[in-house]
Length: 357
Image (cartoon, helix red, strand yellow):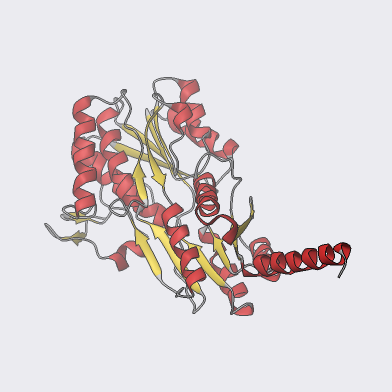
């Protein structure tokens, strides 16, 4: 065999090895409702994707599609990912729920993970974070920091996750400041900077000097900065560019450990359909830096609340609590069960307005 033949044989062998390696590589898809540069929800999910790449190296290939509308477009995107060889697909918004179920039925060998949803199948898992724990911390700080006693809340959609957050923040603001009022604006979007900025401006015009949000962009922080003397909280990520004022702390979603764990399960062949709902204790919910704009005694109180939730000593929904109409909900010392929280569609006593149906 001459030298040229040897080289050709070696190249052919290397090509086969490379093809085999590519075939063995696990392909993981991510479907995002917003852009990866939103500075909030999608930004943190994409940090989780990058953590998967860093952790597994060449053993894993990731792909993603950003700014996918909830509905038929999501179904099309996930179908294309499955057809292109994805072994595992993370769908990262509540409105992707039915598209996930529909596509999963067509591709039983592909594993799907749906964030914040509740519909499962043999090849569909669900996962979410107990964001209401972080909202409790925000409410406590906001109740102390407001001077007008009006706290604004920009809500996305009237789903249980969002209603839980409003209730938790209000309960803990009222614990430290019985005069607090909440004004809620429903934006009906996860990510629309113009709408979010308009909502923040409207709340400020109604007297709110603290703004909370369950939407994904930094537009409310920018609106508060323009207004001056208005405090905000980072949503889903630290939004550190607005520290120390108006952003005085944050809820931070930490998806990386979960994503790494679930990809590893696919690699090991141990993946099963599960429902995961983690909070501060496991680290899925983090609280960002409480800045120097917050008085030391308020920061200490917030840190004590964080520690109590992390240890299991305290639950944000502990009675006595009534529903908005004054009827009893939780007796003294009684803790809300997960089933009620997962389906929460009512306000607690003291909140004004109604939950849109």
